[in-house]
Image (cartoon, rainbow, N blue to C red):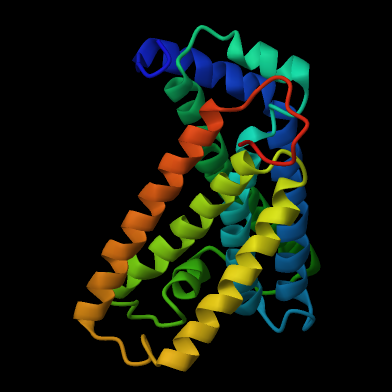
Amino acid sequence: MNNNFNIKRFINTFVWTLEASKKELITSVVSLFFVFSLVLTLGSTTTFFNNIEFASGFCTGLFFVYIMISGCWIGSNLKTKQQIIMYKMLPASNLERFLSRYFYITFIWIMGGILAFAAADLVQIIVNIIIGNEVKSSIPFIYIAISDGSEEGLPFIEFLAMYLVYVWIHSLYILGGVFFRKNQFVLTTLVNIVLAIVLTKIIKETGIFIFIDDIQTTFIIVFLILLIALNYYLSYKLFCRIQVINNKWINL
């Protein structure tokens, strides 16, 4: 059963994952809600964040950071021996367990972030109504923020390449979440910083990607898809290797 997939078992495992992780999920969503509420309210009522447009863009950036780093929490339910034993005793295959955690830290966290943003926008609207200011929703400004500040939006191929970069970073955090047994977020972030420095230096010294046409962008898209697939594959293999007794810092 270790490599099989059954939709009914997967749904049951996913429901169990949501139930077991609801405290963690609520904490993250509520924390994000308070941050968004503060930024949007200050942006719409004061000059601290310049204006509501800037505050919306700032929150959009925070949202993407929140989603990218969420991958590190793929193994947050596997910190103790008891948690690992309980998880491995679930009537599910390794693939079903892995996918249940992947869907949780990806799609459920995205939905939680959207809910937090919508609730925070409602808060700033209510505050502006109470104090008699002009009422503006921050949601329409999200499109401008995610389209690189252009009302026309980015060309589709550039839009796709940009968001595949986000998915790639998210996959790196998933890989770090199962590779490291302790301090996954800190260690994965440090590795990513080093990787970013190395890549930046290579780009500066070689001059590649300075002038990018559609052919180069297509190559980047294909390369990113391959890297993402590799990270997911390695993450799954490491996830399957998680042991009950392992005093190492890494899952190897």
